[in-house]
Length: 196
Image (cartoon, rainbow, N blue to C red; front, side, top):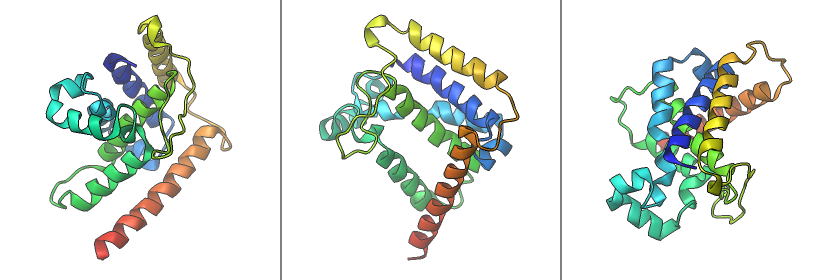
């Protein structure tokens, strides 16, 4: 997927997550925190590709990461998200006031990139270092980015106009409760680490 496609997809995912109330923080969050945060991190997984939009601008960082992990390796995995969140919570000083909705927006942007790359034939190693590739190949790179634009705009339109009342057993409600549970467990893990 192109940088433009990732940017459009992250905006669509941010609008969808906010409107679907994916987490209580996103439900109550500020649009001006969530959307810019998602945009900020939506290109970050491609830091492992020296010719990517971000890789060209940060080549001093991109080249070593590309040599170490290759393109669509570690940076396109759930382990990278977990590692980044752990570093963020353990190393960012308490004096830095980063709103919770902005943090979740950043995670959302990063995950939107991984999800978008799952829509290509190459897929992503979601469970890296396991080499399994997860893919739903509906976007073919040889067809240009027109299909990307159509998909992203359709997702955006759905996110904006989606029904606000979803049944309690819907996939969105189920995923919301899973995210809340994972967030609680992650917070416990971080607090235990901080106390040690």
